[in-house]
Image (cartoon, rainbow, N blue to C red; front, side, top):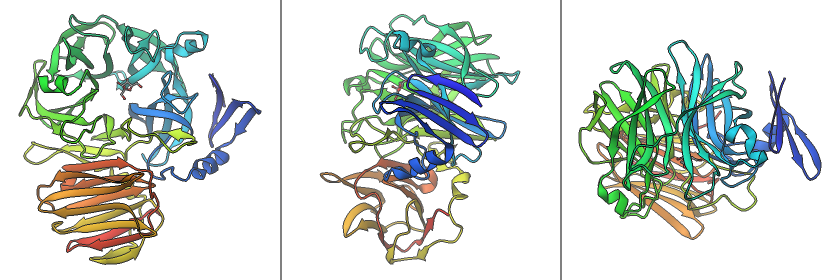
Length: 490
Ligand code: FRU
C-alpha cells in the first residue's frame, strides 16, 4: 500500500480499505478497515446515510468530482482535533454516492509546513478537469495563520493530484493580487471552462468596499488570471445585517439559465435570527455579465443547517453536497467527530425557471427497501430503526406527522393553510421552522439519527436540520389524506 504521513496520523491504503495508524499517549494504535467500520458504528449519533469523518472536525465539501467509476468527496478537515483548526482536505471515495471509503488526507496547509511553524490553511475550492483530461483542484490558502481574524492573506492555488488520487503532488500559486477595494476575504474559487468566452473563468467570494460580493476572473491558460469585474454585489441590507463577505460562491448552468449560490459571512436573517443561510439568484450570463431575472434572493433551504454547498456536473446531472452545521451548537460532549454532509442532491429548475429545485440523487433510493414498512393514510405505527424515509403523495393540506420516543417529541411536520411547519426537539424545548408551499402535493422526509431533510413541492421547498435530542424515535403518528409510505433502509 501507499504510506502517507501527516501530523498525528499515518495511513495506508489497500484494495480492501484503509488502515489508520494513530499516535496517541498509549503509543501507536493501528486500526484496520473492519475495526474502522465497528468504530464508526459505535458512535450512537453517527448517521448511517449521511457522510461523516472517521473522527475530528469536518466542514465544507470541496473538490467534488467523478473520475472513472469513482465519486470523490473531499472536505475541509482538521485531522488533529474536534474543532476547526489548520485546514486540510480530507478525502473519501464511493461507487454509489452513499457508501464511502475513507481515504488518506489529500491536501495539507502549505503542504505540511504547518508542522514546522507555518500555520496556514488549505481552504475550500473546486475540482476542474481540463480539456486534456487532466484533473486539478483550485483552492484558497490562508496565510500566514489559519486563525487570524485580521491581517491574513488569501491566495489561490492549484493542487495536482497524483495518479492514484492519494495526495496532492504539485502545488502552484495562481492568483495573489486582490482588486482595489477588496479586503482580506478573497476565497473559495469555482473555476470552469467558458465556451462563450473560449477561456477559463473563476469566481471568488469577497467584499467590495464593505459590500459582500462575488468577483469574476478570466484566464487563457488557467495559470495567469485577470480580474474582469464584480459578478455580483449584495444589496446594502446584507451589510447592515452583519454580512462581511461572500463565501463559497457556486455558479452553475442549468439549461439556458445560470444560478449563483452564496453564503454570507456574519449575516443574520432579521426575521428569524438564523445565520449561515444560503441564497440563490437565477439569471442570464452573457459576455461576462450576470443579470438576475429578479433581484430577490431565494432562500435555498428553510432549515438552519445547509451551508457551503458545492455542486458539480457528472453523468449529465448537477449534483451538490452541503455541510450540515450552523456554528450555533456543538456536538454532545466527548463526541469523536464533528460535521456531517447532506444527502447528495440533484439541482434543476422549475418549469417556469423561477425556482431552483433540489432532490436527493436517485442512488439514495437504492438504499431503501422497495416495500414500505408502513403504508397507510393515518394511524399510529412503530418506527423501524433509522434511517427512514417518509413519503406523502397527494394534497398535503391538513397533514401531520409526529415522531416520538417514550411519548417525548422527536420531530413534527405539519401543513396548514399552505404553510409547512417543522418542529424539532431541542435541549430547551423545541424549535420550529416554517416555509410557504406552492402546490403542496408531495413531501419526502429523511430522518437519520437526528438529521432531518425535507423536500416538498418537487424539491422547490427544502429544509435541513441537525438535532441531537431524541434522535431515535420509535413511534410515528400519521394523519393525512395523502398516500403515506415509510421506507426503511435495507
Ligand atoms: C465556509 C468557509 C470557507 C473557507 C472554509 C475554511 O464554511 O469559511 O469560506 O474556505 O470554510 O474552512
